[in-house]
Image: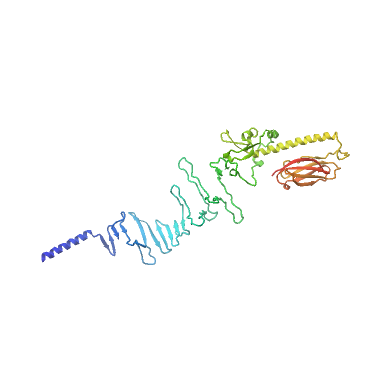
Length: 451
């Protein structure tokens, strides 16, 4: 009996010693902790985690919950290293928001669903205080579309404030020896109409005026349908509308303030006669349509200043047709002077052989119409004439180039007279004006009104 009790005591002692060796639970006051890895609901630990919790639920919610009691208590998870706690996240009951803290609140999720990064009070679904970087070979920012409705828009708006916030879209810089990144803006494609790309300057609410749109302000060039333009503004070399621009007027810098060594056109009539206007067909790659114009290489022999060449001066590119206009104007004036001179010589020859159609005229006044001065004109021009006293009715009739009479001026003066024509009364263009005396056409001349 004594031996049996001694053996039982020995077994119990061994068990107690064994338990004391393997048990790792410890207490410190009311705190109980375990020195080792703990699995709740599982013996398979996840990685090197000290605590692994497995839910036994097969449906619904499962996992681990942390609850604290008290109106000002906040459950939290902390993240620490050997240097101490580095960050934690918690639910803040003061504003019903989940927050991530790391040397300050870095991220906030409001109970409204708004998410703030760098801000604790987001007013939109996502509000970021700072820059946003997208990574990947082709990162895309795209709103989700809804089946059966129109696609969703993306609005990029500068912040409000004094002067208003700007919106910058900048191509990336190259770190080597290649080209910098392009800014590529493309309207969407559609079955009926493709999407437009609209660049609209801001509007002044008080005055109703619109702001300018400035492209390539410093050194940049703009190509519309052209990659790598060589001019400030360049369109494709296509004869159809794909290569054309349209406007009510095209203004060219032309003030005397910008020019020097101003002189008359030399030999305008000869230059005009040496020009070769041609009718031609554009090549298929350039539109393939019939047209009229000049051949740049031929015109260069007459007006080299009107030709644009490549940088090597080996290939002609284009013609400045505006440069041809002054030559035409001066040639027309020279031709008119020659006509006037021949007409005067003919009049003098007739005076020596024929009687005046207006009967006995002691002053020997022959009806005559002079060239208007100046011609061409802009604001006002003067038309001189000569009529004998015997003429009872005389008028100046002004016609456009389609033969439509646009103005009539009654002439009451006899002998030497003049009529003033105001430029604002007519549209710019070429006109004919005739002197009619007692139903007879005395003469007809041309004049040009410019702006």
